[in-house]
Length: 70
Image 1 (cartoon, rainbow, N blue to C red):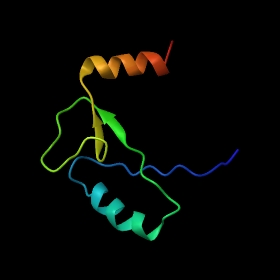
Image 2 (image 1 turned 90 degrees about the vertical axis):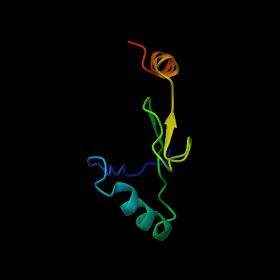
Image 3 (image 1 turned 30 degrees about the vertical axis):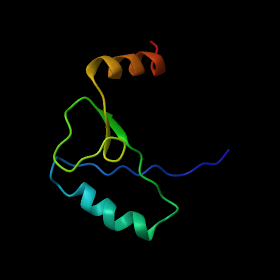
Image 4 (image 1 turned 90 degrees about the horizontal axis):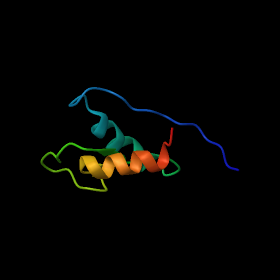
């Protein structure tokens, strides 16, 4: 089993996380970007499956139930 290190880039909306990643990732091909899911609507320029997975509330809830059974 391969192990690695998880890095989290976090900050409020508009802080520049995307700008940091756009500069960082091309210089580090061994790293990759994990795409998160959200129930909010896409903002201008955002693409489903690129920036986020944009899901309806019902779809999000079904996925959550499937993967996080209590």
